[in-house]
Image 1 (tube, protein in one colour):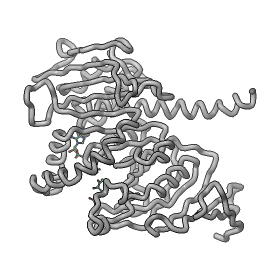
Image 2: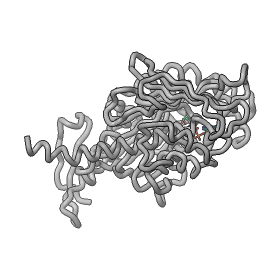
Image 3: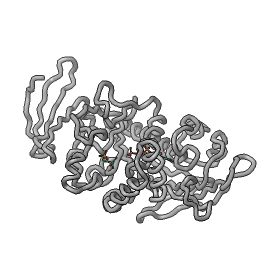
Image 4: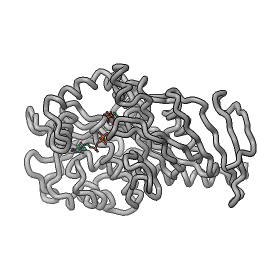
Length: 401
Ligand SMILES: Nc1ncnc2c1ncn2[C@@H]1O[C@H](COP(=O)(O)OP(=O)(O)OP(=O)(O)O)[C@@H](O)[C@H]1O
Ligand SMILES: O=C(CO)[C@H](O)[C@H](O)COP(=O)(O)O
């Protein structure tokens, strides 16, 4: 495509230039701006295709193997349509696209490949192994309706592959190790979630997946968790203080000294005062409640189910905490629990139960992880709808003023 104009611009930093060329088929203009050099000497284009759209950006942070993919599948299902990798693209792409959502994996912003990390003696969790400048520029571009050519980190080969084109979606989810680490990226998020999986549970999940599905030994799983721990504590875990919602997964308290990690105590910590997000509550908003729903309307086998709901503080923020310890025997009876929860942002009575039944085969469907992931999915849909409705009325309000 012929380049018609070259702009130097203050809005972009001095290492950028902006070029534009009128599109032949529409009145829209297509712009390119190119980074002269990224932190890693890689070059990426940012392509402006439609500056009118605004993308809602959601951040999901967690360590590897902590259920991000499962959560994403539940979330995209709330918006309808299956999420697929980009058509005809790199088969090892980490991106998932559905009608409404695009999920990008922040591993794609690793600036050091597997060999590079080994040579420098850093883990993927270390900020020095990640290109936050590029992450910021590209998330910012997508948020303002600008398509980007995003790098791909290939988990099969451990190499950085040729970039893929990402169009601005209605909802962009950035998931991975560091969505809330860089202040500039954090500022771009409309809503943020942290999956806080306790060490005991993380270990049990890792064993289940990496031994059964990937053939790793128990010793190597233990060693890998231990090797990551210092960087996890330094760079990943502190992000939870910024999250609007945290899903904390702990061993059960219903079985004394349980070390199997099968029955879980899950806490949904919801920040108060977040625009377009009102926390879910049990029975009576702002009260403190302990509830054992087992009995005539909910079948429970040992060790039963216990809910708690209370106001609390979390990193100096006011929060509401909803907790579920135990697991469901019969998912269809979940409607009984759903009917006692308020502010669910569901479109109809029973939607939470319907979503849970739809994905009964996903990990965590019989406990608080699946239930709270589903609820957060509905809250994100509600937040998106409010943001869009607000945007649509804003120009009219401004014109009246
Ligand atoms: N809620 C859950 N209950 C029980 N096990 C779970 C749950 N969520 C995830 N797991 C276990 O953890 C494994 C990893 O889950 P998932 O692939 O969703 O995590 P991830 O964070 O996307 O991992 P990675 O970043 O390594 O790709 C699953 O295969 C499953 O064994
Ligand atoms: O923490 C991780 C995020 O998923 C991975 O370990 C990181 O992306 C490096 O990947 P790989 O182990 O495939 O080289």
